[in-house]
Length: 149
Image (cartoon, rainbow, N blue to C red; front, side, top):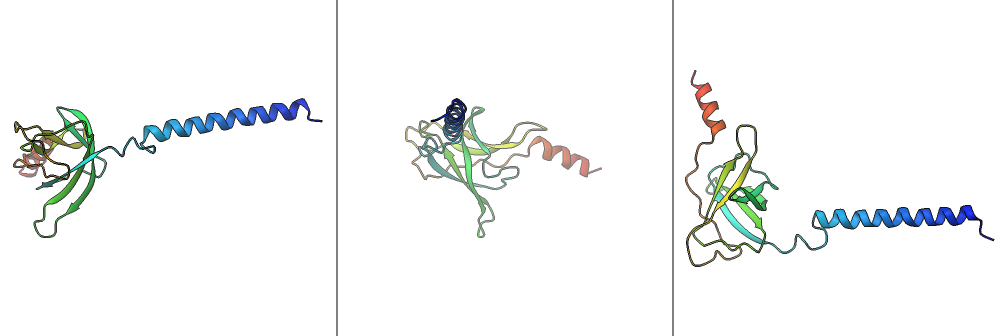
């Protein structure tokens, strides 16, 4: 005969197991384990300087996150930073769009900003964003000025 305490232990164990499975499903969905991260499109960009950019850095349009940096390597021939951007597929960027490294401010990190162009034709998946001449960010300017003294 099964005692009440054994039934209570079994029910408690089942509830704990159900909560743990529910948490794993929730957490897995939040980080893209269940296909949410599969629907993306990738683009390439060559940067003169990828200072402050790492794999996982944000890709933004008008300050809104639309993707992340998924790959970063130095091109041994051109010595530029070759970067792959993984972006939500609901965004179709004009083929004349620019990608630049931007800063969140003095204490913030860097991210890749996409500046949409005006072309009627979209940049194809796997295509390459154009880049603007690199601007000196505020932190570089301050360090440069302090170094001159």
